[in-house]
Length: 170
Image 1 (cartoon, rainbow, N blue to C red):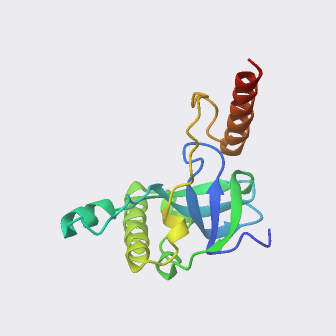
Image 2 (tube, rainbow, N blue to C red; image 1 turned 90 degrees about the horizontal axis):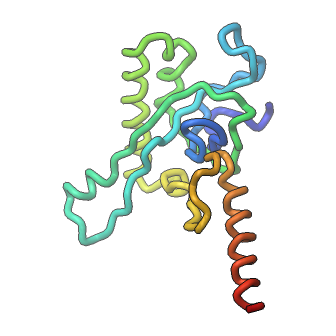
């Protein structure tokens, strides 16, 4: 696909990392023998940095600014591209299809991704990428599939609208 390019920020819609923001490191439109579908190798944030205020000390700021990354091969069907891009020059040679074959190379790649993302965060660029997607505080339990973030928000609005309608009628 033309718009799935290196550096494009996307949101994962299915699976364990649903709702997490990722950067496309290596797109593959045709697939491969191991993955016979169009996919992208992505690097994303599993745990986002916490809020930092001026009153906090250096150690606290350092602890709260940590990022937990992940790298993954994701089918194009499970990616929702955004209008944002993120230039991470250090990741081009580090994360590839061979990275996933051995655990040690995967861990090394994760460490370099972590360093690159933390450097980007501390520089203050791409703030949107380092904030989690907003979750809704609803009366509907969070037992819905995590892929249905927008559906949950819609249902939440409908549910609250019905509750308000019932209150005004009685």
